Image (spheres, rainbow, N blue to C red):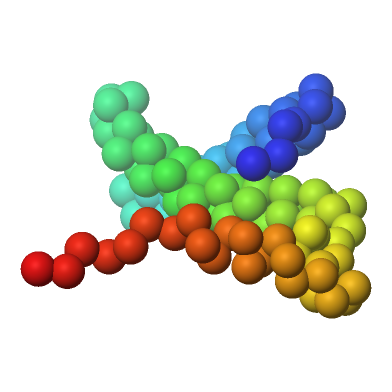
Amino acid sequence: MPVLGRVDRWGAVALALVCGGGGVAPRVARFFTYFDRIRSPLDMVPTVCFGAGGGLAVALLLYGLLVRLRHHGGRGRTDRQDRARTGDRAHDRDRAGTRTPAPTS
């Protein structure tokens, strides 16, 4: 898991707020179109919660995608790719002998 800096954290908060607000707005608009008025503010609680939950679900998916795309390019080659390229298999052979055997009964 990559460690996020201050800008990345603020970006995540902004993404959550924008997507949460984007989920709440159509739900509230649809509520007003259907009922025309609010009898009490508590009538809006389920509408706001479901809208915010839907928006945050989208924000979570977008956040995971953005972090993956941003931090994926800087990794370079892994050790296994380097060994496969150079033909060094000694490390793999040494590691293969240290596996725990399966129990036989």
